Image 1 (cartoon, rainbow, N blue to C red):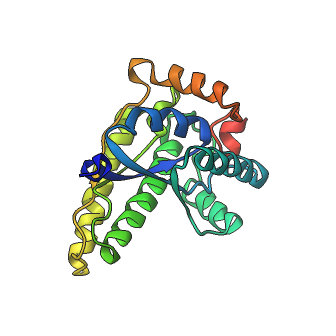
Image 2 (cartoon, rainbow, N blue to C red):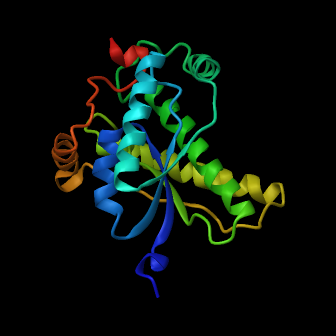
Amino acid sequence: MNRDTCKKQILLHACCAVCTAGVYYQLKDNFNLTFFWYNPNIFPKAEHDRRLTELLNFCDKLNIKIIVGDYDWEEEHRYWRKIIKGLEKEPERGKRCKICYQMRLEATAIVAAQSNNHHAGGFDCFGAELSISPHKDAELINKIGSEVEQKVHSTRQSLAQNAGQRIKYLPSNFKKNGGFQKSSEISKKHKLYRQNYCGCEYSRR
């Protein structure tokens, strides 16, 4: 039996090439990884596109599977600004970030669940690489991820869409045990673009 067939299939939200590199090397021996790009929070569009291009080039270089969300950045960014309205002055790791985590984790879980409705042997779990950043609250991300798992499961049940298996959330804190430092080393080795702010216009300030 091929060793890879024994691994669990996971769909992981990706925010940039640097974080993806660090998480990929932590999980590749135990999971068949597919990354998912959906980041309408990233501002401006030129920065959004630059991070996406860098991520695609990295994944292509290492033959890593990736799904790119099919969305209009301007439309989705307007929606993002709408749902965080009133929280523009929140510090990083604050209430605005909580909404941002949830928006992207929900999108990831939905894509994984929809895939399983149409394909046998699909994703076993979903997650996000966000916790590798020292600026991200891993405990909060995991709490939201567990809530999203239950929400998606309940929605599928109510719609009688039970063709695929239940998608479970993978709790993580990828920054532990030198995870962030390792991702920095890997990014330097591959000469990856390293941004100097999280993503949105408010973190850019």
